[in-house]
Length: 235
Image (tube, rainbow, N blue to C red; front, side, top):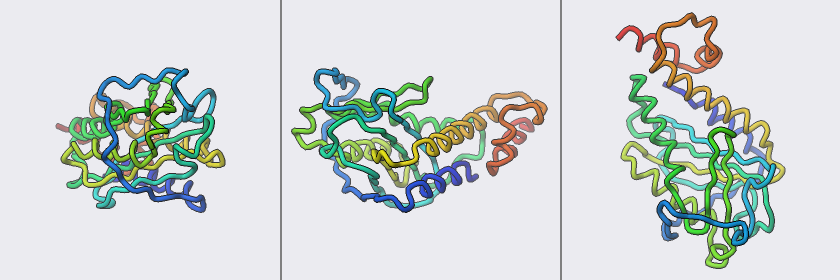
């Protein structure tokens, strides 16, 4: 089932032609656990602060690649001097494909996505609003003095993804380039959310008239969701 392949391809297309750096993975930066509060008085700047774009998304692919990597489009943390637009994109490659049953598939997707709520690099406070669809981050002055970069923050996140044995590899993409087309990216992220909603709908909804379903367009466009829905109903 190729749920997010088009989304992943669109992300790559948006990055094509822009300066993208490959960063080394570092796993030596401390994680603060559940406590990682950075007050405005202690922060150097905010990624996605004020009314700037602040986006985050996770897409899952079945065996698409086998090596971890961190990519950066825009300035790294020590190079930033003020609030900038921000996006964090994760592409997670799973080992043995995705489950073909609605409940197991939805739970597998959400388990991978929920990693972002449980990674707290010291001096890097992620702020997620599911209602507003925003993901921003505060960066502390003290952490920058200690050498915090996206290699450290991202390396910690990649390590957390690998706590799930189903994960084969992770491609983590950070975007801080003000010239990046964040509006177009937001459209793809909205589409990825609709795909996940459609999987959930296939798992929970009773048989309905597809012509009046708000998710019909997604089911028509994404391979496998319609079959998943009717497969659930036939069990």
